[in-house]
Image 1 (cartoon, rainbow, N blue to C red):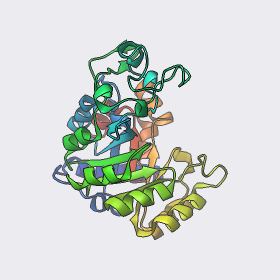
Image 2: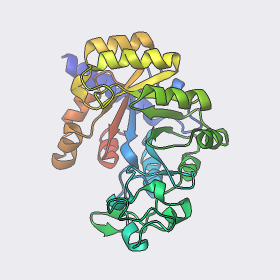
Image 3: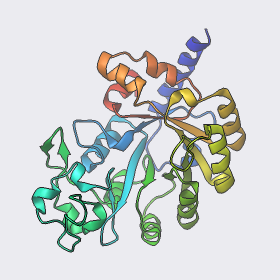
Length: 304
């Protein structure tokens, strides 16, 4: 009975979310207690586009995703780009475009046969094309400025901080709407640094990581809250099974929303079998943000 009621409440909330106008969004208002759940496009996937492209971001906006994940990397000339991997050779044609390695060095041999964003200038990175399913596409790596300009404050945006220059990031965020932006890292001290410099909201991982190898999520939440205080708006769990009643209660006391990844069993059940039951169960678990890698399949089922 309780599961059925949860589903009714969730579906009612999702219907309300569909009517939300996408004007400039405020993080704290959108993630406040009592608001309907937020469906997020992890790395701006969907639409048959490579992840983290301008086309993928636009597609995520078009289909109604309310929060977009932007992984921030730094080029050799200090520019920010949106790209999941620090290594360019993982999913671009860099070794074809630059067969001898970065024009400014170090050599590819000195890098152990690898290529990193920080070894190439923004102009050089723009020459690369992303790979998808083993094939070169027409899509390139966007700058962070291009991605933020495309979103333009209309949806929540997460700066997943991989490598960045704080002063440049501060300048970039000062030039455009930033009430919709959250700074995310597994290290709350990194989030603290960015929040202090830019005024954006704080978003911390509370899953086990190289910083917190053994602590349960509740203990990591306490540690993050101690560092970030009222600037901690959202905290992330990699697995939905870790979302316990104790964790939910403490997060509510702290005024922190919780996010969970649904790109495990939920996405697999929906994507492989068309079975939305796992997703419907997860959407009733008390979190506020739910990440998916298949927003094209999930959002229509939820009438979004």
